[in-house]
Amino acid sequence: MTSSASTINPGTKDVNLISPLTRPKDPFLSPSSFSTDYGRTKAAAELDVLDLSSPELGFYTAALRLPGVYGMGDPWMGGPLSRAELTTLPGNADKKVEMVYVENVAHAHITAMATLLKGGAAAKKASGRAYHITNNEPSLTMGEFVSQAITYFPDNPTPNQLPYAVSLMVCCFVELYYWFFQGHVFAPRHPVWNFTRASLGGLERSDS
Amino acid sequence: MDFLNPATMAKYAAIAAITTHATLRIIPKKGKPSKAPPPKPDDLPQPAPRLKVPSKPTLLVTGGGGLVGTSILRQLTSLGTYNIISIDLFLPPPKSPRHVPQVKYIKANMSDQTAQEMAQLLLHYKVNGIIHTAGVVFMRVRAVKWLAITIYITNNPSTRRRMILTLYETSIIGAARSSSSLRCTYALAVLPSL
Image (tube, each protein chain N blue to C red):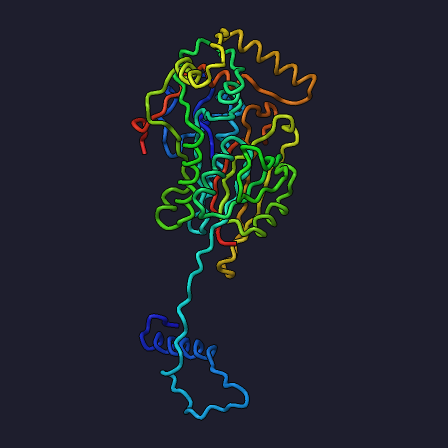
């Protein structure tokens, strides 16, 4: 199962201050500690799915927790850059944010699936656990990351930085608009939080 | 019954050998009776060793039209070792960069499918594993249902058991704020032989 680093990020502090990454089973934080339902529901689902693991019955499950994912066509980075539409960044873009390439994410899925399909001792060991996907490299700040990405898209103008408070305010208005006039939930605050809070990964932080 | 007794084991081995040979009787052709003496048991052709036909495992990738799902499909097809099925709300057009050849695409809204329908899909395609990357499209977040797939483990009928695999909804950007039953995750599971 592919989960999210949000499962250990209650949304109020930086991820790297909460828990070491790559822990097999992080303690489930209380639902009230999550500021968004994204991480809360991810964490709840992850625990449920991992509990379903029954190696003695040949039923294996695993969870992959992803940080931010980028790649061609992603809706928040690659897509806007390719259309020269990435004009604004929330916050100061000075926080280090873990971002992984989508092809590496796919490779992690396939590796995990191949291990579980083999069965035997390897699958039993891998089953019922959650794994973090990380570059195992020092993370770049969001500003550095975007600056490097823009070099491949010279048509995209240099993004402006929208202050964090203003970003959240705009998101709140957008959410209210969708809630009242469109009749459904849209939570743009979540990516704003993701891009403005530090999330560091690395194997040296592993305790497994 | 003492199965560890060597004499008992030899007895059952002999019965097994006779049974095996019984399925390999040589039927003489009509009109041409064979004059050759009946073959001794030792002369009978030995059963050919059962060749394990390398069947490709079948994987179901939900949300195969998404960012992560498309990359998974591409890498899986490049390996060539899996039969791949993708289920998604939207089918990528054949000329779309997100369309991956050699993938069986199924257009369906998983949140609308009943557990029985999903179980039938798994059984029909003999799915061995699921990579669940499907997400809740925020426009439909109010229509979210839990998906429960019943998997019967029939390897040993005497200990037939039932397992419930719940496929959860995933949200990329939006998640319901008020729905406590919404579960957002990706799922990756290997199923017992169906």
